Length: 233
Length: 340
Image 1 (cartoon, rainbow over the protein chains, first blue to last red):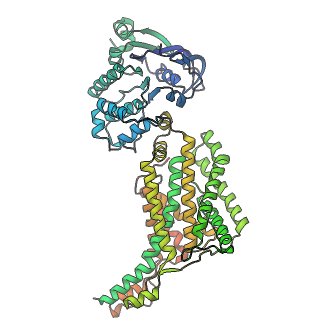
Image 2: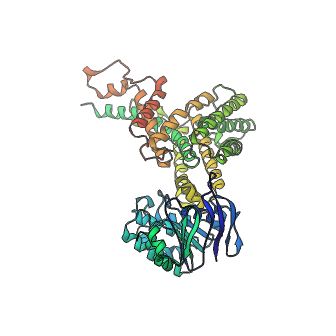
Image 3: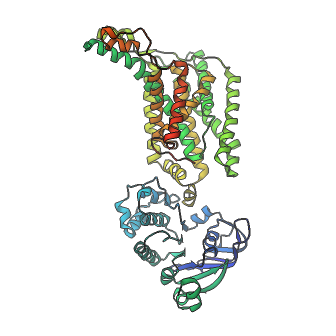
């Protein structure tokens, strides 16, 4: 797979949160991590980004071992990350947020910016407004837009729909499908398991830091065990 | 109704003794507070060494000025110190980078709490304080030369025929012009340049700025360079306008912090506005209004009392009071500063 974390084990210094868990995603694909609270979903994603110490396991991007790289170095390698909270520069305008997303790039960013504006037209309208003045859903669009500015090959989203209305959530998922169509590998952690698995090519159900079920999104939705325990009927 | 001439006299009097000195002092405080606020916004601590760093920059400038004077270099009507200023700025920048490298960087790597940084800056304050006194001594130094006035009081009187004179000192003119240029530069830098935007992004959201590939070391370095330059310039302008004494510079810490906090710490606009608020408050409260009043009041209301709210020795009480009131009523300051 394009980005894969294999047999990950580790935590934030205390007890291990991840116990031999394997997560991966291919280009032009959406992989979703679901599971109950405290299952280590966000932790697994942070491990892929290099934000925690692994005691075992390996992360590789396009065949290259990136296990020892810092988060910043992984960003430079083409992984973009949208944190769950505090994911925009609130005091800066929408346009400046996008510009900061492209900070590492030395080439002309106008084309990428126009692409983001096309994806999220509301951002173009509000380009001169500080991101802190936008609604929750619009902020989320700024956050995704900022991450896309590096022209990443992998986009990681930590609960992108947390706290937004169902309409905004559908809209956001539609946009994410468009990003997938552009060939980007998308890895997300989602609380709204049913909707997320609906658009997922690959689904991971984590429990206590272990892979419980791994299959296509469709198959997981059809699996009665998964439905009963994690989706609610 | 007072006569027009009396009203004009009162106006000139007020301009000469409150307005012009207030704008000058306010500009000096604004530059100082801008440095404090930049450090606070990016490095997230209150730099208590600011006043003494200011003294250090001024001291180097004075030493170079003396040397320039001894070899016969001068700027004609302008103070020679302006030629020496770049040396003062460079030395202050080096000092700040040196201190950051050997003091603050350690605490950053330890992810220490802001109060630890503040205490460390207190130590730096004592050290720099001692260094300055060791090199130049604790006494008052005057290093102004060149033309003293842009407009002389006597000439103004002759020109207008008024009783009251209006004088504008060269140092006052210089302070206001230089402060204006610097403020415009700082805002242009923060709003328009890549490094300036990186500073704002880092200050706004450190984690996200790292995820965007912004180099924290570079941001920290840029911030120190800007703060050090502003500090050195503020110190030299203050010293030219009044005089240089290490203890006075240490005391300037209070009005400078009051200015930064009143404006909203971490907000550059706030630092400027705060500087003028503090300066004018001090001026207005400590100015004796006797003459001003006697020009305007009818004959039977003339007074021989000074009409001074607070004697000048207590001017620091003004900043202190404003500071306390702001912290009680609106801790975020006028422009909603960020408080960590």
